[in-house]
Amino acid sequence: MSMEGTQDLKPKLLVLIGPTAVGKTKTSIELAKHWNAEIISGDSMQVYKGMDIGTAKIKPDEMEGVAHHLIDICEPDHPFSVAEFQTRCGELIRDIGSRGKLPFIVGGTGLYVESVAYGYDFPESGSDEAFRQERQQYADTYGAEALHDKLAEVDPETARRLHPNDVRRVIRALEVFHLTGRKLSDKLEGQKRTSPYELCIIGLTTDRALLYARINQRVDAMIAEGLVEEVRGLLDRGVPQDSVAMHGLGYKEIVAYLNGEMTLEAAVELLKRDTRRFAKRQLSWFRHMQDIDWVEASENIQENLEAIHAIIAGKFRMKLEFFSDQSF
Image (cartoon, rainbow, N blue to C red; front, side, top):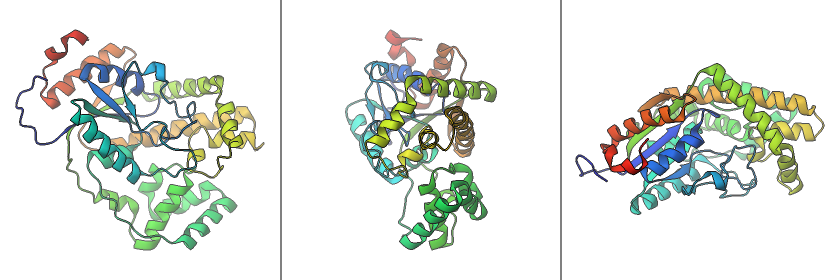
C-alpha cells in the first residue's frame, strides 16, 4: 500500500460499530473489499452454531468472498465470554496482519470491541458459587427484571448496559460487587485508554425513528424467515433454556411463546420492544467510547462509503488512488 510514513510501530485495526439494524453488514462488505480486509465478528451471539436468524448472521452468499471470523465457532451451550473473545480476536489480528490483510472488527457488542481496541485486562475477581446459586434462585423466583433491579441499586451504569434477560452477566456483575466491594463499571472505567493498535473506529448512526422502524421490519423478516422454527429446533436438540445463548434477543421471547407463556403476537411485540431498548443501550455504550468517527448512515450506501473511505484514508495515511480499480 502507498503510505506516507512507513515506520508504523503499531499494527492497524479497522473497526465498524453501530446499533443493530443500522446497516453495518452491507457497509462492512464494501469496506472490506475496498481495503483488502478480513472481517472479525464483534457480536457476542454470532459465535453460536445454529443461531442464524435471530442473530441476523450474515449468509455465506452475502459475504462476496470476504473472509469472516468468529462466526459459528461454538455450540449454544458454551458460555462464551469477553475474555475468550479478546484472546481469539488478538490471535486473529496478528494472523490477518501477517498475511498482508487489514484486520477489521465489525459488531455491536460494545464491551467486546472495546476490550480488544484498548487491550483491557480482566483480572480474576474470584468466585462464590453459593452466591451465584442464590442469585439464580432469586431470578427464578421473582424474575430476571427483579434481579436486574438489584444490580441497578449497586451499579446503575452496568445495569444500563446489560439486558435484564442476560441473567448470567447480571449475576457476575453482582458477584464482582459482592466479592470486591467495587462496581464492575468502576473496574472498566479504570482500564487504560491507550491502544496497542493504530486504530480507526467508524461509528454508524441514524435518526432514532428510522432506526426503530428498521428494527421492527427486521423482526418481522426474522419471523417470516423461520425464527420460531429455529428456536424450536434448538430446544429439540437439547440446548438448555437457561443457557447464555438462549437468553439472547430473539430467543428468550420465542421460548416464552413455545412454552405457552404468551401468544406469538405478544412475543413478537416484546422482541421489537426489547430490540429497540437494546439499540438504545448500544448507542449509550458507544457514546462513552473514545476515538470514534461518526457517520450518519443515509439510505444511499455510496454516500456513506465515500465519507468512510475518506476517514480511513486519513487515519491510516493511505492514498485512495491505490484503490482506484474499486473506486466509489
